[in-house]
Amino acid sequence: MKKIISVVLATLIVVTGLVACKSEETVESSEVTSDVVTEQTTTETEETSVVQTENDEMGKWIVPESTEITDELKEVFEKALDGFTGVGYTPKLYLGYIVSGGTIHCFLCESLVIVPDAVPYWSLVYVFEDTEGNAAITNVYVPYYSTSGDYVEVQDVQTDFLPGGWSASMDQSVDIETLILEGFPGTDLYNVNQYTPKLLLATQVVAGTNYAILCKTLGESEDLWTIVYIYQDLEGYRSLTNIAVLDIGDIYGPLVWN
Image (tube, rainbow, N blue to C red; front, side, top):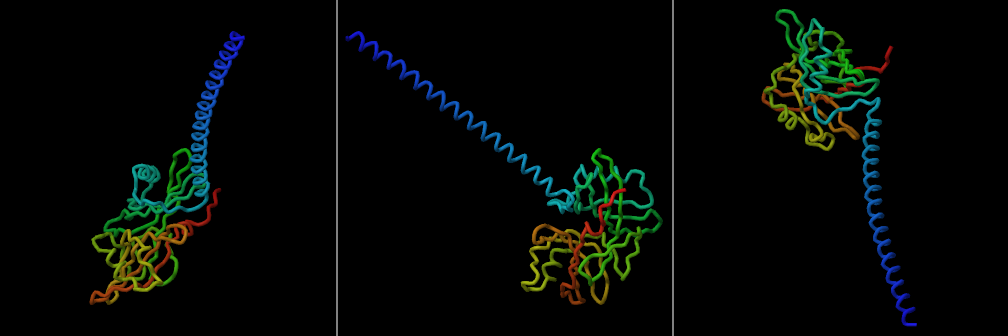
């Protein structure tokens, strides 16, 4: 009888040990599976986020966070400019892009007609870059400066002549941040913090001076470009005279490919 009890106890000990080992293996296996599932879920989430971002940008003009002309953008621009004659273009700011069968880039460029005594001016140069890396200039526009109107109009001619007595300003020594800060009225109608001055585009002398300042502007849902007009009288008093939207997408026009 004692032998039978001993055998039974030994068997129980062995079985209990096997069950415990099996339980540990199950826990370890569960932990490994959980880690793998977590990694897969994280990866899938990141991939979905990237795809969603790309889809959101398809067919929509995007104002980038940085306006810097990177080495990659410079390479694209130089490729598009290859063989282009008559006018020299130097990109200064990257205004935006749209993805549509490739990418259309919009550059703000210092421009100069290649003739004696030519005067430099600012222009919007659009470059189409296809999916194979080829690039070409498709459109060039010169902003029309005016202290009236809600949207900036453009001229589609290459010229250093600006109507209305405006002169393109290549001298960026003017303190445009102070012009903006002191020129905006102290009311809730205009939030000066929404306007980040980037460049002085043009000036107009009229018993004082009008300044046309390109600003990156915080909109309700996305950034946009505006030209803010500040008037400074002969005593140095500054006031806001107009804000016009520079809609790079509307200026380019409908995306119709032959």
